[in-house]
Image (cartoon, rainbow, N blue to C red; front, top):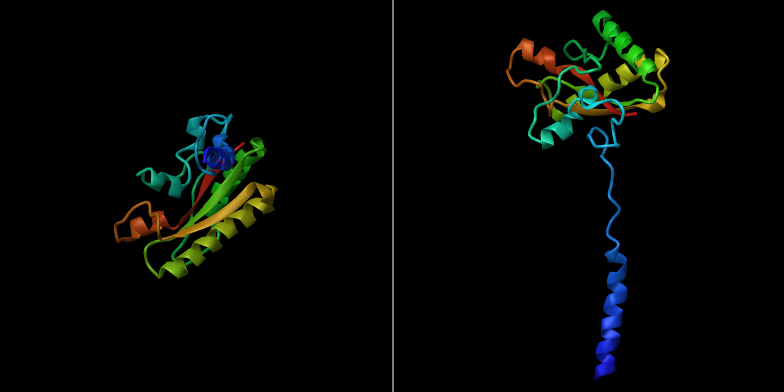
Length: 176
């Protein structure tokens, strides 16, 4: 009987041994802040509050502008206009001065239209901004895109002023 318990105890120890080391601590995910992780060397004020989704998870509203300016769009459009080109020129200049920085471009829309349509439109807006930055010499590998469509608005009023603020691509610095 004693050998049976000894064998069972040894088996239990062997099965639990791999768990004793625990999991490797993971670093911050893109858009999150962390000591030595994303944004190391930029300073907290340069990084902002992380991605719109990470801010929402923390109960915060989306961030507007930041180190890199937001690019705004007309209704139902992903066309880059003159004002957007000016913002992108400043953003490209910052990216050239910070050659190790990587960014995520978040495509946002106003509240009108279906979820599916707005996710697609947000993706087209983010791609248009990425294409413009790549055309200005920023490596495509440094830029990722995501669309939130109408899901994470800056404001919730149903008027043109609010809708115009929500039609944007927001740039999040992932780190250096």
